[in-house]
Image (cartoon, rainbow, N blue to C red):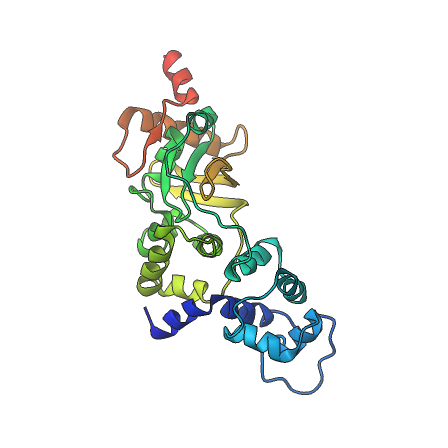
Length: 299
């Protein structure tokens, strides 16, 4: 990894604040732009005015010379930079002001396994903070199998040449994934896999490095994906992601199709294929799924 990136790791809060102020024009911040400007976005002193702090203090905060900002100060800076909820929380974590969060041991409770198994017409799987799949129902295993046998979603996305074929709108998926992993990287104390994953991808994938350096941050919520699966063809799926409260840091993702659509039929077929073939993956498969059970009973 480059020396510049190593230095950036020492002042992630400053790098993040600089990236955020570069996105805001004076007009968007309610300021009047006078004369020529040598910087993109807001100047440091303009952020200081909007936040109600001295220019010298804000400069020290960005430069990493002020390491202990108060919650009130960070709240004012977040408002000045018009940070959304995820970006605000990320800034607070970088300033070591948010509650610490660590994922528990990656062993699914019986209740969570039952929940995974209850999705009879949808792919459901659980990932850890490094976006590694640690459990999946049979439909999800069939959906994921061609893409990442070992469950390492981001490594497949950025290092496997087949990824842009599998993810038809690869660029959108890539940006959303990096925004999500940056959110995970801000947790304190960090998950041991996340930092190593970021270093590995930063070195090996110019595309990852470019998106990472943009300092975009957002949690995974609801997205639409077009998947081109080698076994069942094209699928149009809605992905929804939820935090697993009983195991902080883990996330449950559910991929579903419109009722009665060809994509829903394709998901059911993937579950049937997985139930009969059961590939060897780097994550446990929860099953049999109710959908597959009913299919078998009817034959």
